[in-house]
Length: 472
Image 1 (cartoon, rainbow, N blue to C red):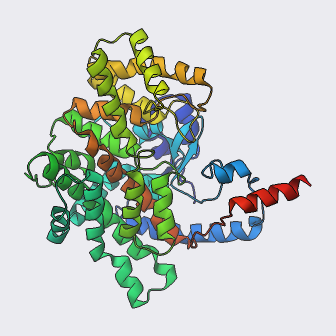
Image 2 (cartoon, rainbow, N blue to C red):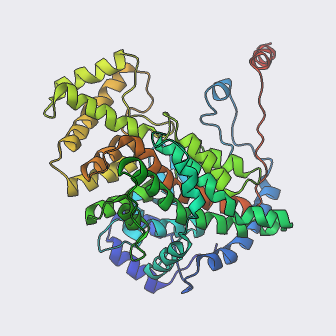
Image 3 (cartoon, rainbow, N blue to C red):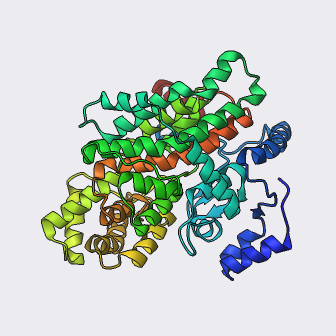
């Protein structure tokens, strides 16, 4: 990609982000949107050919370069630390945390357009960034927001499919069912059945992905209102942006809750490709399953207690602390409760991460939001105490590689404060957000012609025999 070096653009950028040294370093490579074109797809049409050539040349020149050694621990340990997947939209560093197309979360908060001055970034802006690698203008984000609004139409049969389930079904079950219902209108499936050339796969994938991203807030809000609000549905408001409208359809119209939803959706969109939901979406799509089928599969992975369901578990655990010890619990009492949890064979939810080795920056930005909007909330103060108490205990155990809080340690308390108290629903919010990251990568999967994923598996006996031969 050619870098845009307009002095005007850079001067505007510097005036906005100030003189922070870590941010100014990122500005050196940052691509600013030079084209006045407001159409996202037209930008992709320009970018895709050069990225296809880049990948082709890179593979030809470096295809045989080794990226590391595979150990038995990696095979038996969930493939952790094993590099084996191309994921363009984000990269997770164990110490720095997530970077979206090279930008950290604080940088995204500074650079991406917001709904109001000094507000949280609009999720539409991050969608543009993930797809193009460029920071969009406010006009481009507004145009994208309107495009998503125009695509946000859900057929009645989708709602009927959800209604066929017991209202007591888990919200994620109902949400995934709705996404499968949306698949009936897949443009990729129609194009593939007609015989589209593989070089054009990305185009119907783009249509499906944009439609899916636009429609999942309607499906998700329908599930929420059906379960918790006696089925009283709130229509979408086309005057609002993606995050604000989602908050509105759920039934929360306070400016602070709309800001929280913009932040929540933005920071949960993507976390590179190795996590369960992202990898599942990529894996299923590698079989040329359309984005609806792929994302529905990803949602089923997200619903697992070791992945997206963890944000539900955190709030329930925190409330159990309050129920047993009261809101004014001391740090010593909290230490005792943490040890009680660990000694019972359970984990303290919201702490630790498969890759990160420091505090999750997604936790940090939510903490900053809480300090700004709800500094005196008892549950937030309890979360703050946990930040001081839990890491030393987990470090003392000696079994945890990362004792620090992750994104789930904070999100439930924020949602609870603004009235969204139904913890079983929290993973659905995560799913809406994750549609942006997964679908962005799926478009590039098809544009780059990435192949069917098919790693090699072995038996335990094969490993034993291999290790005997290696030792001989």
